[in-house]
Image (tube, rainbow, N blue to C red):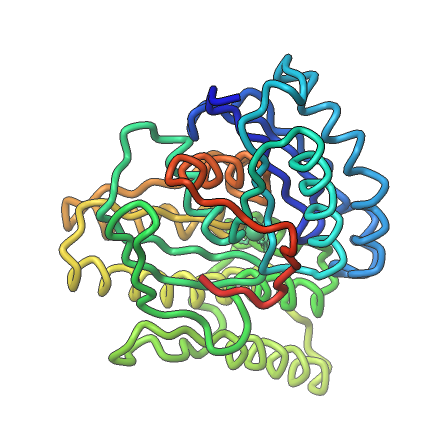
Amino acid sequence: MENGLILGIESSCDETSVAVVKDGRKILSNIIASQVDWHRKFGGVVPEIASRKHIELINPVIEEALIEADIEFEDLSAVAVTYGPGLVGGLLVGIAAAKGIAYSQHIPLIAINHIEGHIYSNFIAYQNLKPPLVCLTVSGGHTDLLYFKGLGEYEILGRTRDDAAGEAFDKVARVLELGYPGGPIIDKLAKDGDSTAIELPRPLINASNYDFSFSGLKTAVLNYINNQKQRGEEIDEVNLAASFQQAVVDILVTKVVKAVKETGVKDVILAGGVASNHQLRAELKTKLDDLKVDLYFPPPKLCTDNAAMIASVGYYRWQQGDRTEYSLNAEPNLKL
Ligand code: KG4
Ligand code: ZN
C-alpha cells in the first residue's frame, strides 16, 4: 500500500521494539519490550541472553504493534529494520522478521542505521524541526557529533576514540556497585553531590578537533576508588557521581558549543540514552541560550532504543525510493 504506514523493527541491544509510524512523524504504536531485568544482575547486556529474548519477544511484539495501531500486515507500505550497529544476534532476529514480513506482503525492505534512528526521534517529537543543525548522539555504544545539513546529509565532526559516554556511566556505576544501567542512577545520585569534590580529568576538552575520549576519565575514577580503599578511607559515592558527571557534561557541552560557533547553526538536537541526563540538558541549554540557539531533546520514550525512530527514517528512505536486497546482513560495527 502507498499510504505511508511503515513498520519499524529495532533489536540491536536489549530492547525488542516494533512500531507503526505514519508519514515519518505520526506514531500509531511504539511497543518496547525491555529485557533490562534479565541483564541487570550481570551489570551489563549479555549478548547470548539478548539474542534468546529477542527470539521469544519479536513475534508477540510485532502483533501488539499492529493491534495497537489498529492495522493489518496488508496495510503496510514498507518494513524498516535496524541492521547495525549493535549485537549481531539481536540484529539478526529483527532482520529475519523484517525479511519475512516484506517477502510475504510484497512490500519493500529498508535497512536502517540505528544511530540515524536516534537522530530522527527528534523529528518525530518536534514536527517543525528542520536542518541545518548540530546533533550530539550519546548512548551506550556511541558518542557522535554531527553537522546535519539536510535530511540524510551529514558531516561527522567527531566521535569517541574509545568508550562511549553511556558506557563510561555504566562502567563507573558497575565499580560502585550501583546497578545497571548506570546512567540514570548516577544522574539521580549526582543531584545531591558536590561536583567539585573530586578532581577528575577532562580528556581532549581543549583539543582543536571534535574527538572524544572517556576511557581515561573512567580509569581516573577507578584509581580514585582504589586509592581510597588502600588508605582505608570511605568512598563518597554521591560526590564521586557528581564529580564524574560534571566531567562528562563539561566535555560534551564544550564540544557542542564549539560546533555551534563554527557551523553557525541555530538549532541543536540531542539523541541517545545519555540525552536524558538532567545536568547535560540544563547546562547545555544555559550555554545555548546565551548564543540564541535552541536545544531539542526527545521525550524519554523516544530517547532510549525504540522502533518508532527506525520507522521514521524508513519512511523518508521509502519516499526516496531506497530498497534493500534480501541478502541484507547484520553489520555490528556499522558507522554513520
Ligand atoms: O540509546 P540507548 O538506550 O541504547 C544504546 O546504547 O543504543 O542508551 C543507553 C545508555 C546507557 O549507557 C545508559 O546508562 C545511558 O544511556 N543513560 C543515561 C541516562 N539515561 C540513560 N546516561 C546518563 N544519564 C541518564 N539520565
Ligand atoms: Zn541506541
